[in-house]
Image (cartoon, rainbow, N blue to C red; front, side, top):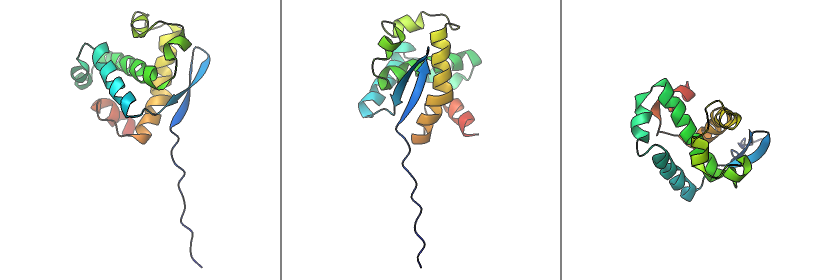
Length: 135
């Protein structure tokens, strides 16, 4: 009698995200979206993303979480800005940190999307975050 090999189901390539009571599907990005995400990070940080990532300061980490959440969600959630009722990333960047949209977006990014993404892809652009998530 031969023992059957256990088959591991493939990891899901999408996850549900809820921001301001609206549930949407966020997908794992394709190559083109990955390029757009990286470009967005540079635009939103005025080309200082890497410097900020290596700083490791609490405020810098919070700002990078905000940049990452906008960059990823804008590219992997269809009609992201329309769903939130804002025109573009500039509208989000002008909001207060304690606004419901920003706090929901950060929470969903940090608690759901970032761990989901890191299961599928070993992220190295923010070494401090990557190290903490693996602990």
